Image 1 (spheres, rainbow, N blue to C red):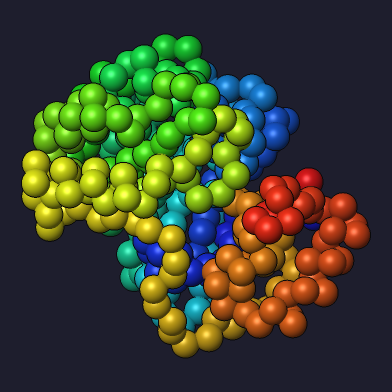
Image 2: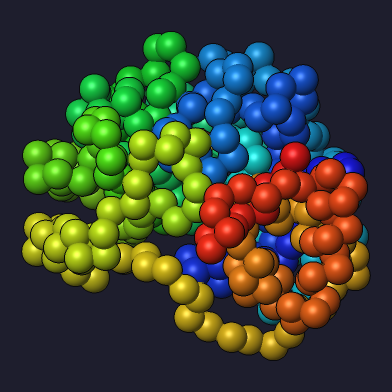
Length: 326
Ligand code: SF4
């Protein structure tokens, strides 16, 4: 089954109703990324990309525009067009041009979700600044913790990323939201939810001065089974600390559960839409119902079909079962 450039729309807690754009295809590797995060919901990165010039499977601007022109007209009320997907979008250096071209055919706000690895590059910052909002990940202000959690390609260091994010925030254009993925471990692995880490995060976030800070924890099976979510009590405690130190108005605590319900999403090719969703993030049955805004009786036969064709597999326990692309 072919992966598509434009997928969705899907509902999410952060962005409401969003049309996704995947501008780095799998290429010769399972996943094009320059990180191999311990919490990655898509599993391990077999081959870390050291540089955008090494990426295979780059999508061209014309392909994106053609896909959107054919697609977004069917959607009544999108909240965002979002660059994300199975791979790190900033690895495609045509992203800035794509954003400019999308603006000529659509007035839907544009979001980029990035792992922040390439904000050290001026060309990438210029691309990002063209969006309406950039959601950039930062897990730690400490080098050893950053290396332990994100396991980046050689040469990527957190102090350069912090400087890059600071530069990006100074630029005209996109609003900057920093996403802090808080983690715990059941085996003593170095993670970022203890007081020492939280204090360092507050220090570097005060320096970067982003417009928004989102705190969350992992909610899908992570790449490493020794990684566990931070408890809700601890998350709230950390959020309160952030509120006091950085200003409550820009702190968002993302907890489980979708909050809003809007008019029904229209579907044209539900089997492919289900597969597209699972390809980009493993989902439970209920999460698919929520994200695609469909009925369980519509979903059940599609899932059974995809399982029998071995396009998807089940992972996790019977109680907490997720579906992932095979
Ligand atoms: S979580 Fe994102 S940045 Fe980390 S390995 Fe997975 S795709 Fe790459």
